[in-house]
Length: 127
Length: 363
Image 1 (cartoon, rainbow over the protein chains, first blue to last red):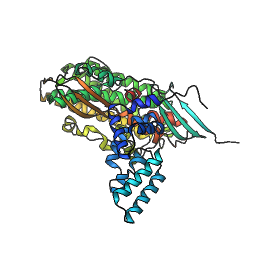
Image 2 (image 1 turned 90 degrees about the vertical axis):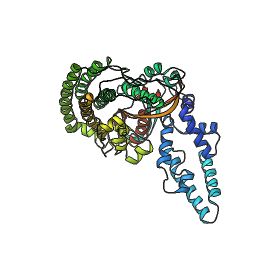
Image 3 (image 1 turned 90 degrees about the horizontal axis):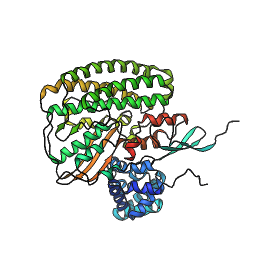
Image 4 (image 1 turned 45 degrees about the horizontal axis):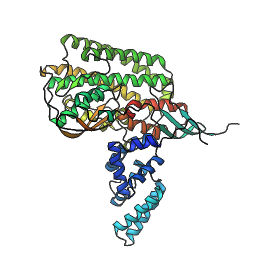
């Protein structure tokens, strides 16, 4: 049901994401996940409310500092970054992706290609 | 027969407990809050856009209009950022005067935040007592700077006005009165059984969650993050031997108590500054604002305030981005403190306990 008092917030959310610092962060996340910038903005607008979009820059900054500091594979995948700090992926889905990447690495696949495969699955999940 | 019903409860944009318009959309199952969304956009100023292309002399006045409650720290952080770009030194007397005014502003802001909380939990008597004390603090701000709110006291290389001996004596006398009154009101808050019912164990945010959302200021320090206080990195505060206050409970009570404790800490800092004012006579060092780029952080009453500034050789602001503490605290509050609240009645008090400033958030 569409209520009269429910506003379309997409334009305001877009304005938040295109401010100087937020724009830099959105571009960095898009590059890291291998998604187009405009597509990334659309995903963020669809997924998050206005306060989380405003806080995106601070959360990303904290994620780079504190997320997955002791596991390089998890860090490259952004396991904690994209579940706890920027909650784009459900923790269960991320855990399954991480375990599959680990299994691939253990079975002899090169680390970079296993991580690329993991990132491709993350893209599928958030699209 | 009692039945749990899933409903979406909108709070605001106009609400008796909100100081500014904001809309919280709470999805509930019975009394339990499952999810909260924040809807902003009711008071967007676009102040960053207005600042771009203007000389620093105009932007310093605009900066303190970002927030009507903690305007002094916006002035301070902007001016210190411009000084950082241009390598301008501040005389010791001016540095201490800046701290005095900044701490008076912090006291006024903390008292207002706690007034709002008391008002929200229906303890209006204590709320009004607190507002009365705040008037004395604002009178002192006016005595020193000529204005209660938008003081424009700090300028590159110093401050506008000196503190006369008569004003110094009046300030110290008022601080004694404020301190005595606040001791009484804090005791009322700490020992009130109804206050404890509405505050203790309500709206808990863990240390890990505070880190995730980059919660700042008293909100973070109530969740056991003393290192979040940026006064630790400020040279004048370092000279004063500043040590941050923190608690570990992470609930509404801890957030309010941190602010009360910080009021006493600020009073001590002001007294120390007044003692050290004799270290120099000059209040203006002079200098020119030039070209450069800087990201400068300062500790506002609500927490970390960041200014990213890019200026040209005439001191014109080419680009500016302001990250106010309320951005982080409101988000942390909506997504961690309010979510899983066992009663819808606790939503407003928990929201107010994080001292949300919507004007700051929307810039």
